[in-house]
Length: 118
Image 1 (cartoon, rainbow, N blue to C red):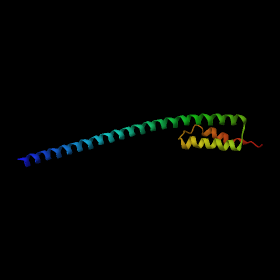
Image 2: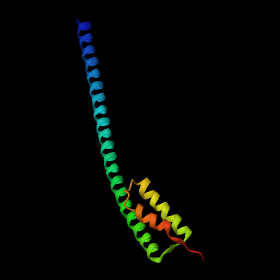
Image 3: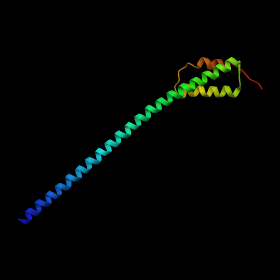
Image 4: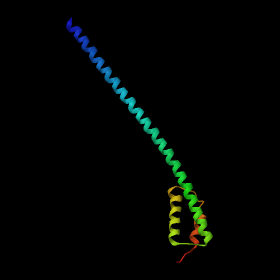
């Protein structure tokens, strides 16, 4: 009889340990799931922020290229380095930031300007 009771207690203890281990695994899985969701949420926020910063940079670069280009056209000439830098800025705007072609005509006029000779 003691052997039967001891065996029953042992089975109950084993089942309790199994249940505790299962609960612990589920709890760990829930924490990992929550961490993954938090990481995904943070990535989405970073992607949104990055897109907004790219748009802002695009507008700033557009405005700067347009302003400088108009100033050089009004002056009727441009320095070699200034033209090189402006073309580099336009390449970043147009190719790197996927800007539209609104500045292409302006850049054609700037590139047709007489080069300053000092």
